[in-house]
Image (cartoon, rainbow, N blue to C red; front, side, top):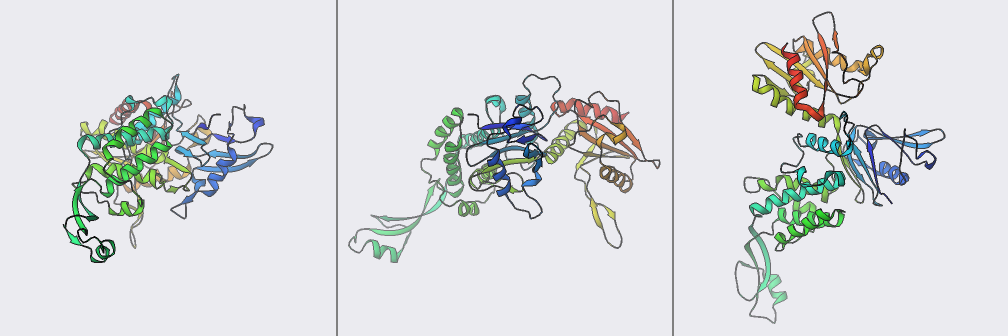
Length: 430
């Protein structure tokens, strides 16, 4: 029995077995559990819910269907079934598309400011044989390995103990209760230099939980090896209390990423605004944000050496300024050199070859680009879409407003992003 369903963005999942071989749908034997998961999902923001990444619809003759929106990651349901959602990335002619897609996606994730991974090495593991959750477990393992290599932190920790000698402070009430007939003993509170601090307790608790969750022999073996470094540490018994005690400073900098990961695994948090139930887990990433972050980071690598200033989420311009500043304008990327200012906005959307329908570009996006042009006093505006098979060899597309505003399209090849952005730079410089 295969408990993993692998799908792509915008795929449609069904539970009707009569259509299990239909190429337009993805059949899932645990479909009812998926519906339950969507309905029980809670949210930190009252304006967001699970329908932000999945939509339940009813289709005649098929029944309920679930449409995947542009959130990517892995959903783990309480009965052990999993749904792995991969991004829809055009890779050209690649034989093992899913493995390559995972590699590109992980590279994109590492560009995100808040994504907790810096030492992950995908060459050291079999990405093709691991689902995303196992890959994230391996990321945590690699972070712990780095920590252990540099030495886990010890600090003065308060201890209570009934000892045969006096040190620290006598706890009178506990001493009387415990030692009424043992005059030679002392119930004391004292500080001891020890690794049993809250950050190490949380790391140990996370390793122990992941050992139960992982289905990878490689991950399980590495976790057992790492746990030997935490033998003198108690496993956290109160996650919230220990998280509240962790202070990231100069002395605990090595724990910063691990603590973020531990919150994900121990508290069932996701990297999105969604929070699952205690028995269901979801690691989900909004592809608009992932794509924007990836392009922006690579833009700096490609453009800055040639003297361009690259700013992300530029601030300071408003749609209206009287009687007060209202409706802030924040284009994804603004580049400047000499007296040129160029606006670039990323859109994670698949355009299609249909000029009559404006290639699928939304009218709202064009209004937004026009506002950027006027407020930034620039005629150069670019919309950056991910490349797809329909548009890979399409001639350059541009729109002119008639009053010195040009909006040009560029299709970013995320699988070969550096070369793709060098091509964009050539088109901008001309």
